[in-house]
Image (tube, rainbow over all chains, first blue to last red; front, top):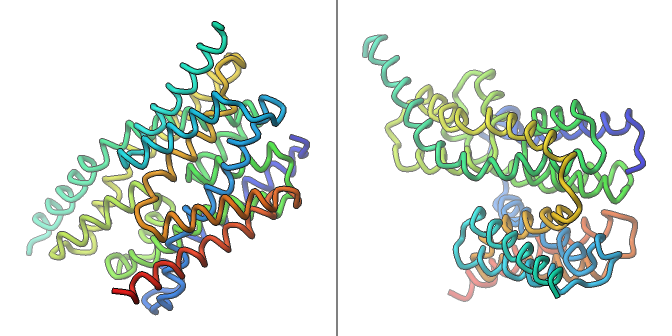
Length: 111
Length: 239
């Protein structure tokens, strides 16, 4: 990370204000006026539109292996996804993915 | 209704909220510890990491911002990526208006600060199932749900900050973050529209990987939101 201290505090402050304004938007400022249904529909896809695109390069080209695809990390990612889709539970998915990662790393360390 | 029964009902609503929020303590601990660990690992000071967690109080966006910062993305792109992750909360905010819109301004501001996935989803379910609740009862219920979660969110981040410095590379913490994101996304892939949106997000982000950090992701997210909306509309029209 190459930001100055001032820049880091700037990021934190801007995110604090921006996040609060997003949360306060309708409840606090806009009130009861109805929103166009198309906007509501677009907004509903926000998390599923942002997170997969963010995570894909991290899975395919991990920084820890200098960007080379790593079988252990690929399998751990697949396990996380599969458990999450099947169990619909964030916590189980995290635990299963981490367990797969550490099991794989332990196995590669042995052989 | 007398003042004392009003107070009793408000207290009961608060206690019901505390009860319904308690199971989320198990979800909050790993995320908040992890944020402390990853933030320290990325080079944030104790004061910076704690301010982050207390002021922003939104797990996924905090992780997204950190990831962009580790990649040394331009400042506007760090902010855009993290705030884009939080945009769903505008929808949460909008859907609370029919239930809490009549509450005093300071209470609506407090609810807004505490409005994240767990508090929102728990509260809105209760409001829908119990239409007889008064506005003060609804506010108290929301505060109740937040009560077991928020102090734990702060304190476990602090634990992560102190633990982070002593965690060796062999723990592969670099990859705990992608696992966290995947774990958050997987349960959301509940319809064809959501799957299509996720697929477009991945493909476009990978195709645009050589753009300045964060830029490709924003284009990918926009394309994915439009895709999800189009697929959902198309499926509805076919019925």
